Length: 156
Length: 289
Image 1 (cartoon, rainbow over the protein chains, first blue to last red):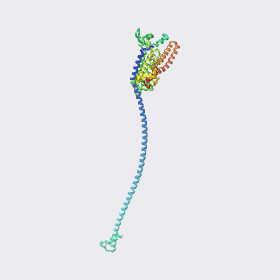
Image 2: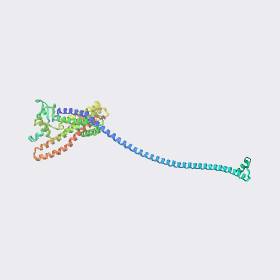
Image 3: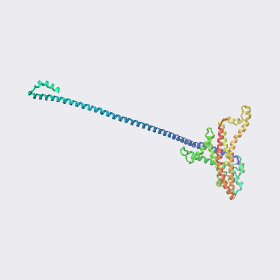
Image 4: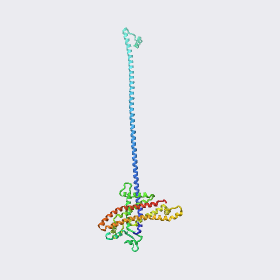
């Protein structure tokens, strides 16, 4: 059990191994480890972010659904209103049109009546004149009595 | 083998390193016995210790390098998983203890942990296997070959002195020469009065030097002592195998039990060596006096 130069050899070997380890073994392994840790941390981060995004999206969807429902109800309400309005308008229009047609028809009837009356009056005049001629047996001078006849006709 | 020798010869054989050095008579040669090895003095090498530790170090380095080369931040493979577990474990230990910024500490800790563990692990291989293999390969049945480098105080002291050199280097680098000397002389006893402080300086220096020198010594001897004792018990159990059926059967049971217990020890000692290295270097980086 002598203490001898073996310990020098051992020290030299030791330093060579330590230096090799420090240069070529430690850095790649520790880099890989740290990279993986970072990757995992990033992955977890991304996952939680995605979960938050999903939650937000759910909320947004629900909000939009509510909005859409509200809008749809509003539109239906408006449509109903508009429908009754249109019906009312049409009814009014029809009434006005009917009134107009009726008034026109009455006016026409009136006019016809008047013209028929005029015609009858004229014919009655001439009938009266011809009746009077027959009674008198003599021809009445049309021109002389024209004023008398038209006076008569106007009285009928 | 055990049967051919006396028990004490067997144990002695197992506790002798294969030494290569300059013998005063034989010149540069392998020592043939314990006495020759002692006569070689300091300039001799334990070839078995160096060979096994370097081979184990290369296994560590190449295995981890292979994993590091293919390291990906995606899904890791089996080898990368294994390496990452160790790297994360060491990195965590360093981060808990060492608060400065130094790129050397963590790789240093990893190297110590894995290398010392592998050297300790040789203890679990039955004591005769590798020496027998080495003896067969070389063709010399009496070849000395100690398999567990950490049962050689040279190996543990080599590691501990390397760590000690790092402690001194970083102490001086961080605190400056003056700061380091101040730490050794103005602490733990201090006084506002300069005269009294001057009296305290030698006392402080003595105390602090003992503290400082105790670090590498305790590091080296703790590892060596644990592993040497463990190895010795394995050898004693192995001696039982030559003592008949009953004793041999008991030996098998003891061998198994001691090996199981030893699994704990080899990991623990590797961890302690690493942890104390980190702590010592952390203290060297702290400038709070």
